[in-house]
Image 1 (tube, rainbow, N blue to C red):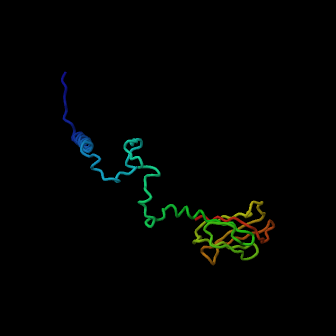
Image 2: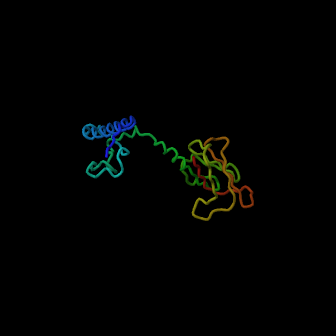
Image 3: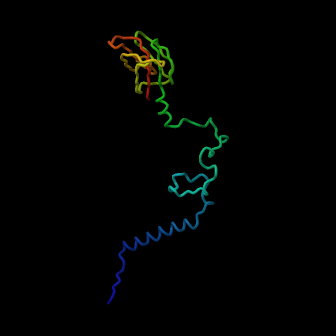
Length: 183
């Protein structure tokens, strides 16, 4: 029985050559690059495959709370983290008494009663593009009052929120309230 060996097609020759070159490059890198060729601090966590680092490769204080020495930090060079600006907006809140006095709050510059059932709460930044949420609620541990509440932007102040409170019949009435501004 005769066997005929055909010559490989040109595409098979190119594919085999590419395979040998690619395998040879990896072998060359493994054989010639060692830890002395890597600059300290140039390899990041994402460069490692999960599960490939063992305890013996890491320095004892290389991870966790002891990885950065406080003496090496310069607070004057630190800036706000980009996502912290978004988180900062969520914390603007106010608890206002029925006479317009600020009981407690965060990011509030002032609060005032401007008329019967009408209040103005001014925050420490522009809140025009924010979301306002208010509810009637007592400033202490006693039960909340009954009635209605509405909020809107203060036309005369970009940092202000206007709050209107009413009793159960719909007549304007002084009520304490809780206000949250989310930007």
